[in-house]
Length: 419
Image 1 (tube, rainbow, N blue to C red):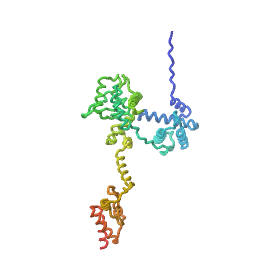
Image 2 (image 1 turned 45 degrees about the horizontal axis):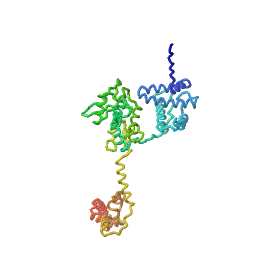
Image 3 (image 1 turned 60 degrees about the vertical axis):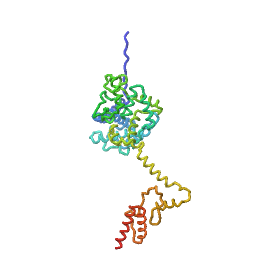
Image 4 (image 1 turned 45 degrees about the vertical axis):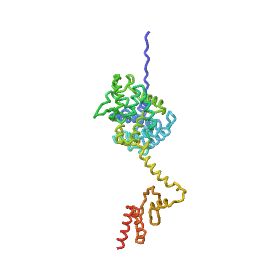
């Protein structure tokens, strides 16, 4: 009996079907897009090229579907862009939700860059001017990183320390102690751990931002890594961490994180939250933003500054100090008869003014002291000499050196004017 091998049918993807349709119905449109993507593929990461290709494909799908008479990009005008923006705004995802702002930014931003470049590069199929403007791009959602608070982080780390499975504990310790991304963790090479300058370092492979770096390793983590390397091979993968000889992937790491988070009783935790948590804790304990940027592999401080917005202790302390002073202004004075001692203190700490006295309590500072007299627009004449003299003498008697000097200067000006 002869066994018939089943026929394997490879079906084209949605993107492949779309580009084939565009090549048939609007060949110039498809050719320009493919030429542009081929150029990007020479200089950008393949993920960036794929995202750009997806954005162009969706725009072409809108043009072909809504404007069948349009055959090339040189014919695209403002009306086509506005129509596409309305379509994006009305799009509903499979989850029944509208597109996120960052998705809109990406699709419209890549489209705007496409038109800018084909115009600058002198493509024959380029419009006279870019039909998109910077105002078409929605403002970004500057969301705070979702870090664990100190209490939840402590619970999580206690469970990590008690984890009996070596690989799981090592993976989570690396994520918690170094702040590397999951993709970087899975791509760590077997010789990533090295000793330099008296310390141990972890070489992080080229990742999301196309830059490699080294991060310092703490002694407990070095011990775990040394033990792991002594008892586990790389299975021919060339990787530092493997799961029974197979490479790790982000889904496996996510399951590890959530298994421990569940035991810790802190709910669902995404692996990237461990990176955010390390950065937030470092900021709040005084680590410089430049150092945190180096640790996390950020290209600019703008990426790092987000962590300083989560729980800035300096802002909180200064706000509380100011709030205490403001609240004191509204406190009701004690409903008690004034004693001689209380009256003596009140008079001693009062400040003589031109037409009366300041009775601000002695424990409250005043940022407006002598504000008017010290202003460049303040002017006085000899008829106020007696008042200014009394104010100077009062300030001198109470040891207020700055106010004494201020009134000495004003009185000196009156004498000079009189002469």
